[in-house]
Length: 143
Image: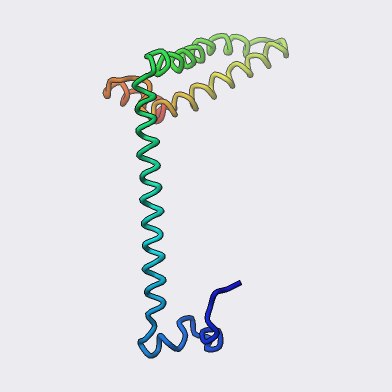
């Protein structure tokens, strides 16, 4: 149900007769209230983001090197190491071995492109800014 006064429905004008006389203060009050409500919502969202950032930074500080980089680097290394086996199986004339090669190559490709790009975009592959830049170019630009 709309909350519009009867006068405005009858006139057909979106502002109603009060705006023609210059006495239409209700619209500016509603606009001001809406703007103030939007500012409150933005401030609340910003506060939540600051809290989330603080929690993430705390979690990163408390985690070990293995948790921060080791697991992901191991997964990427395993994907790169599986490439020769995948290529070898792709050269097989046996349909089952060939399909296994396709599967290995597909998984390796997905891991390298998706995980590598995601980690490189966040700079999570290295603590050094120069190496982080190198990995970003390697995974994002070259792939």
